[in-house]
Image 1 (cartoon, rainbow, N blue to C red):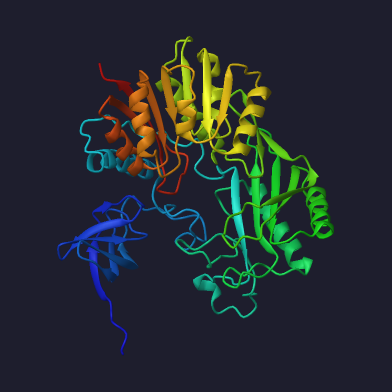
Image 2 (image 1 turned 90 degrees about the vertical axis):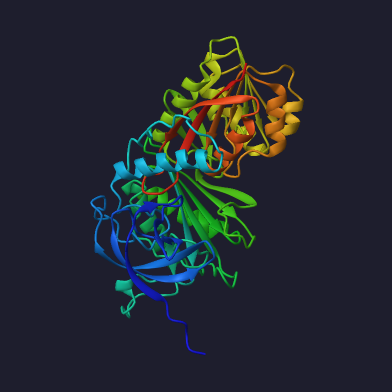
Length: 463
């Protein structure tokens, strides 16, 4: 059968949807377009049509929006690392704030909640302290690379095309990490190619090299390299680690994570230290944190300082309170709040995260924190006294309804909710309205050139 032809048309983009896609209305439908921003006059093709919406592919920008700027990265529009480089940063902040406010209104049904202008990231490039680069036996080509016969199409070390697991660009440099990271990445690529061991096939699930994960400490300039492989090879990996450290004195740690899982996750079942320390030390404000290869740590260190300062201000502690921190991770929030309260209890299900949290408290001389390892509901049930203040920083899926019900039962006088997902933030705040009023929400940008945004909400118990 002949291939169905797409409808091609011209349109002006009138809005932006959560997820960063441009939007306009056509034939009674909302149409979503990747790579377009309000004010663009574009030519596009309708590629999918449903009852209530349609999706289109951008073919050409006929007249650019005044908010459109030249993207400095050669991979912009192809790479999934960031998708908004062509949008002026001030407008990025405006649209992120709007996405939070619209989620509260449309998903949470909450009208009139003050949503402040987003706090900007201190840096808009070279801000990421962690990058994961995927190894693949198939290289996804840029348009200007398709006709180059000298390119090795059987190897890539880089970032993914958006929404794909098997399309990997051979990324020479990522502008979201410091330039030292790009030099380290280039040397890792050279050593991998010289190793004689094959890259991992993301469809065949065969091969050796899987990921190169780079972490850096903004406060010291130190780096950690985590080489993730499908099998162990201590002689080869030790030799590569020694060469990396000899070439880059700023590398203080090289480890090898080994994973036989098919899932594309850069975490191993086994970790082998190869060279230097087993962890990296970083400072947020005056506090020191120890970060292991698989620890969770906010990827924008300086932006995280602004986030935690907002949490501390919204908590408004007076010194005598008991505070509970849900989903406490590696203890960053308890460390930030400990000197302002009588005691703080962190609840976290991950054993390694709890170990990191205890170590981080020890590093900072904090003695009034303790941590419960286990399910959130179990931790809340085990509390010796009802908290005055609860901090919640859940994953993107938000809080389970059972956790919301337990918070309503406990009835702390104040809740500070930290969210990386405006949709689940709105849903959970709506559920908490039974007992709490949301007084204000402060977006904090930790992810320039992406649509992602952190937001901190301050809730007070209804009288």
